[in-house]
Picture 1 (tube, rainbow, N blue to C red):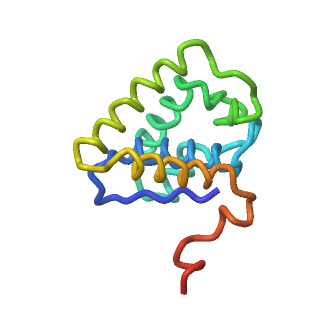
Picture 2 (cartoon, one colour):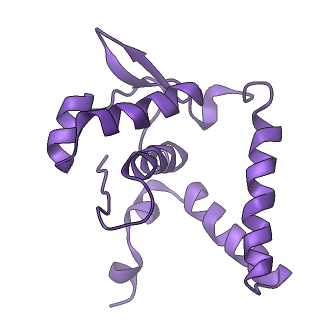
Length: 141
């Protein structure tokens, strides 16, 4: 798994790391039991402070996606095949979803456009690995 961050983005770096790990799990690039780079190694690789990586990993731990251990480091704790989500997850997720949908509507996207984008995004997570690895630039010369 390759994690890329945009140092010029308004999105905090720890949030970008968190988001890329969640996406990798959803796209089956990471599975339950897979190790992640150590906080220090990922910080060196990205050229950032290791506390930033630690913050991202701790957030993923609190969300139930990572297990952190001094000996084994950061390990994926759950993926789509791990069964039902923890109690309260769906309600919290729905709250965040409501805000995202409100943003789309407030910016003028109609219902069909929102649903089309949701379907297209979900298709990325359901695609076979070979299709997921291709980027739009490679598909459309």
